[in-house]
Amino acid sequence: MEQKTARLTLLIDPNKKAAFERLCAQQDLTASQVIRRLIRDYLAQHGVQYVPSGVGTDKAEAKGKERPPVGASSRRDAAPPAKRRTTRRGA
Image (cartoon, rainbow, N blue to C red; front, side):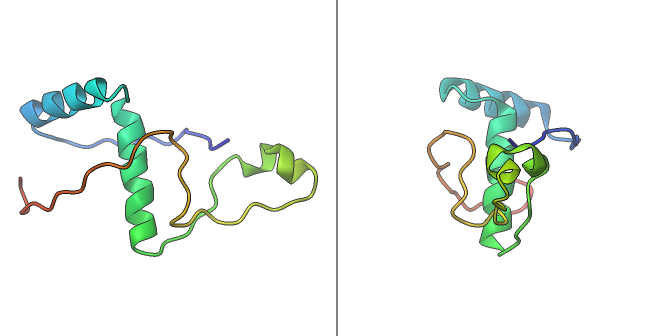
């Protein structure tokens, strides 16, 4: 399982944050789940591969099988894909 030990801090408009948290709650998701999925999708969209932390504790690894880097086909949070909407910067 992927370790979640790094923190990402960002500043956001309070009203936008409240609207985001309401939408997440309506979809029975946490804000963190949605943001992690957005980051994974963004990395995949740009062809960036990585090996998730904590892979050494995986049962498959214990048997000598290596896990491939996470790519575009990886979906770790069980949630439907977010609807994409293009906006202008600052929206």
